[in-house]
Length: 115
Image (cartoon, rainbow, N blue to C red; front, side, top):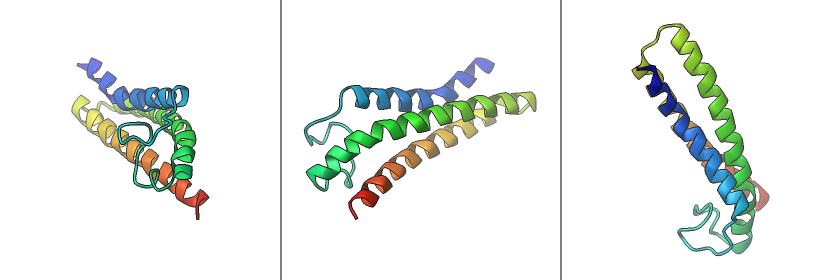
C-alpha cells in the first residue's frame, strides 16, 4: 500500500520536466497553445518574451522544492503512522498549492518588471 506514496511525486516531476522543456525549447510565437501562456504574459511582445525567460527557472525551482518537501513530509507522516490516504491528500494539496504559487510568482515578476 505504501507504493501509493509515489503519487505525491507526480506534481514535482511535472513541474521540473515542464520547466526544463520550456528552457530547452522556448516558445517564440504567441500562439495560445505555446509556452507560458497567461493573460499577463500575452499583454505585449515584451511581456511574452520575459515570461518565457523566467517561467522555466521558477517552475524548476518550485518543482525541486516541492519534491524535497514531499519527501520529508511523506517520511515524517509515515513514521507517525498517518494513513496513506491522508498523506496523499496532503501531497495533492501541497502540489496544487505549489503549482498555483508558481503561476502567481511568475505573473507577479512580470508585472513587477513592467510597472
